Amino acid sequence: MRGEWDRRTTMSALLGAGLAALGGERTAFAARGSGRIALRTIAAEKGIVFGAEIGGSAPGSHGTAFTDPAYRALVARECAIIVPENEMKLYAIDRPDGSRDFAAADRIADFAAANDLKLRGHTLLYNRDEFIPADVRARLDGLSAGQVGDWLHDYVAQVASRYAGRIGSWDVVNETVDPDTGELRATAFSRVLGFDALRIAYEAAGEAAPGAQRVYNDYMSWGTGSERHRKGVLALLADFRKRGVPVDALGIQSHIGAEGRGMSDADRRAWRAFVDEVVAMDYAILITEFDVNDKGIDGAIDVRDRVIADIASDYLDLMLPYPQLKQFLCWGLVDRYSWLHGFAPRPDGLPQRGTPFDDRYRPKPLYQAIAKALQAAPKR
Ligand code: XIL
Image (tube, rainbow, N blue to C red):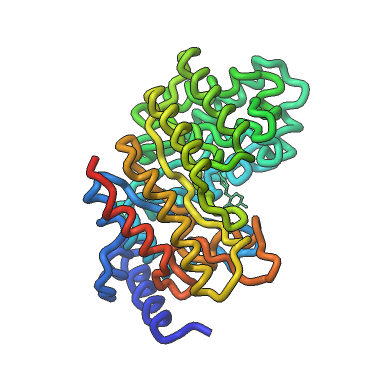
């Protein structure tokens, strides 16, 4: 059951939404007067754009964040930038009859504009077969390399041009490095086009959305299990430079904390060496999808929240000093909508607590950890 505080929040947010469609939600939430400084404000002082994803949620979570006015109001209050969780992916846009549906993506883009939020795009080429709809794969089957390349070019150009001038940063290619081998994943595009699939995506994005930052986004991490993944990503980034593919930045997803693990000293060294190599190749870096998977963390809620906050502090204290990092987005702000419920359900059946706000939109120790790390970050 929702408490009094929560009902009031929802009421004021609903009022705001009613008065100005999806606009003005920041005002509605701020007017409630929590007295807390928004994360976007703390980040802005350091030259960092703070934000979160908003949109549909994974199976296992408790609903759809974007349709919840209280969630939208919280996002408008805390964030300077948003990114749609799924709504700009091929599987969300493409229809089996070959038509394209941008309604859900447009709603989020309109919400961003109405609330003066920046917008990131995610993602033009999620290069894994499981995220390329079966009917798209069937349509591509048997086509020549030239035809597959044209299909990809036209798709990327259509999506990128629709949001040109509105999206300042695109995850053009997502997760194309196979973490087990470090090689490019074999997909409906790369089996036919090889590396050119990536080149086509980046070039089409650049032509269709001039000025937008072009990002390669992936989930490599610090542990020994991620060594090949890190090596593969470094090799890919080096290849982009060698072959003249226009890529500006590495998106470091930062789904951290798997199995309750923080960084050992060896992990920290390995991770720092990785990030150092990335920036030495003249790439910007972004934290694009930060959350803390607490699947392996046992104990009462306050104990779990403490461990989660400590893992986060450790990571953010390493990452935020990099002056090349100017965008920091959480993969959701509120636990109830986190994809982690579906992706990594806890064996004890308890809900994951990997985002900064609890199910009643109250800040948790993870929020404090983020705020503190931002406060400690140098200006850029
Ligand atoms: C996830 C969404 O959060 C889920 O709702 C969806 O079911 C699957 O995808 N890396 C990414 C994101 O780049 O697109 C993923 O988002 C999380 C991992």
